[in-house]
Length: 318
Image (cartoon, rainbow, N blue to C red; front, side, top):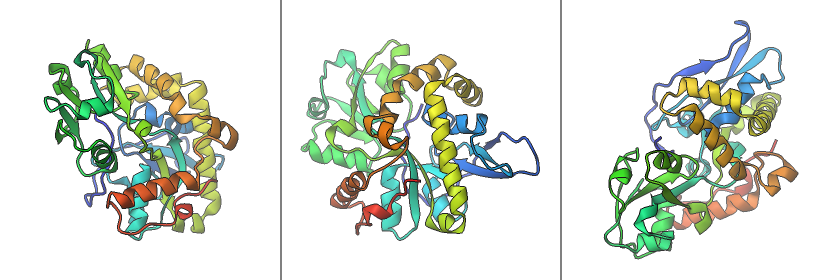
């Protein structure tokens, strides 16, 4: 699986749609993903399978994306109303003057990390970046990469562009790469080369991830619809966390690159990144202004934004 770290790009890609329609007369409310059907989206698929959208004249659908699907720009441009993006994309988008807003944050702890082979002997991220004989594949110019490079400067390891897959990792114990800590390490272990994965969130860069977004204009136009979509998504995630088998089987049918066993293992492994002590009190997917402010300050310091949007304007807990 290719790691999902998303850049604001102008290209609007052609994407495939999967709709679970029951009546042709119903209006379809689409949620566009920024990647393929995988466990990180399990609750969205479960919301569709479980028909959790409580509006008899509408139904929920999921539209698969890919590595270059610019969901944040598609929402900002009014081409779609609901999509998945990353938290730092929301900040960057608003800093550019859009009205894109976050509604539901699936991952409370960002699952992006860097993995290196266990037989490399490397014990932590600081050690990895200090080794001149190691190569690390990272996507350049994005928040997580810039944060790591700044925190551990001077970086002595060779940084190369990330191109996807784990082929180089498997072939060279001195090759490290970005990853989803819930996913690529499982693939590596299955290939007989277990990984040691380091969460970038543990180092201090922790944007909300797999975030449902819309425009403030959509909320103003139909606030009850937006509330209903968020409620449907929250219920979908509650159901998926409790019993992921049905959604995993469905997604495995859509995404042949991952077997059902891996779907089930990821679903278990990601639970503590989604459900926290805070979400048990305030509800799955809820966000805080304090978290958004930290992210705004970090992106401004890294010069990824020229002005700071108001943290309280970046999200709505519905």
